[in-house]
Image (cartoon, rainbow, N blue to C red):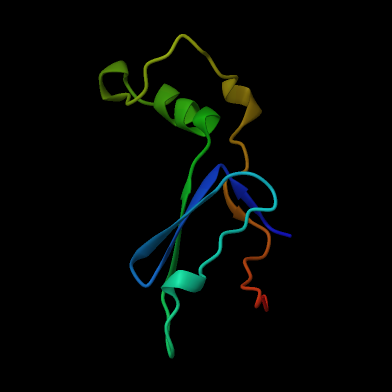
Length: 93
């Protein structure tokens, strides 16, 4: 099973299907499929910690986030994106 960190938004053939942010990280794409070639688009939102880490490297006037939380710059970035296999399963109902 794959993993999405943090949220994966799925679009098939230009139709927004939904989002996956918890196990088993699955969405039903049936309604958007067509015969022949299909286009699958998956956009993954980065983790909040990584956003804060990135902003901390910028001058204050160029930062996007504003929070009282601080992150440990020495800890490095958290894993983010599609981690593991992405697969399409055929389910017969």
